Length: 480
Image 1 (cartoon, one colour):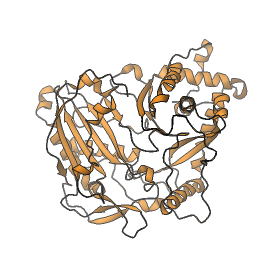
Image 2: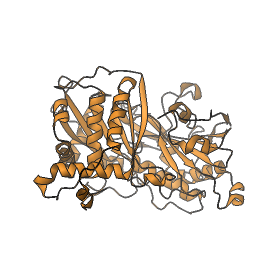
Image 3: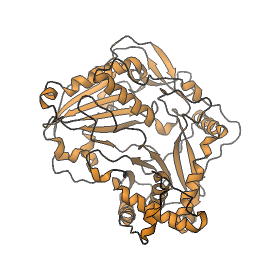
Image 4: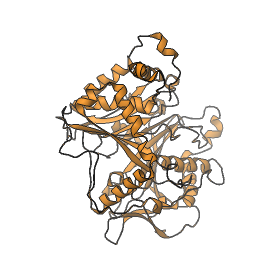
């Protein structure tokens, strides 16, 4: 994220409180699935939401304390999502499996921190372009050993609400990826908002059912999409000196990219081929990262696309399932192929790879592989030559999440230590306060600092891409 903050953010903290369910909940130990047990997911992921002051009803808003309203919403939501008030523990049987222990102990519940800021939210541009050190002040890093004594278990959920002088506020939610994926996090956050704003129950009731996604240990040797001996290497990796940036692409830039790809494809498909934003922009970003990292040309690079399987399973998972429910579709190329192939050919490979999870055998094989890796304690970590792409645009993270102050105007993630930071790429929806970004995409990437300038050049080249033939503008088979 670019450091363009004109204001030095200073916060006055209150004491930490533990929010408990508003009604009695069961005492039990719940299993997590094989996907949940992926060691790369055992990390607290922080998301920050920004809410403007409600200028349409300033007097009514002043009577409400957002911290009080949100705490009530969390407490009511925990009756339904009581596992989030428990602790993540490791199975005492010694097999290393993670689970959730719910026993209503004194320290069970959700740690909540309230803070008051010394400025207006607008001075931070409603989080747009905020630098990472400033953004980190708006979340609650409860994982620090100095903040709690029990290192054998973890809170899966923490909150921090920061109130600004203008009446606006931010909500920093930290949620363990071992317990929820993006859809699950969105479902829970919406439930908190619904109950905080006066509804008697959430519109979607949560369902656990993690046992449906527990695999079996494979007897045959594991086959990975790419092996370390053939993997491309970078002069910039490994590195601890990282840069985290969010790039903005307006709808017109993405439309032009798709048009260029279709022109490139034109003679072969008679205009019948169509590319989604995920496919087109994903291919461009993958190639750009490989170039910025200066990956060795004869080595292999991997694009790993997270594909949801809630509706692909037979029978499908119930609507309220909030655990991790995705598998990976993969594309492997040499770096030379990625650079030399027409980009439209790379996009076609991505489009084709998305069909892989439509096969139940493929899904089950992925789950069995994860279970085998857990059992054998196999961890992959950040490779530097791969890109794990996940798309948040369909999660409705900025839609209809209203605590009584209207919907949030922005949402940003903090960098997560998943896949060594650099392998992870997020596609985010645009903020709600910039009309020019309607139909656009924000691309969040982390790279070694030495390789970020080249990546920025690649991103700028996409923004200024020009149309050479106006007739292409009339093509109608463009998907979003």
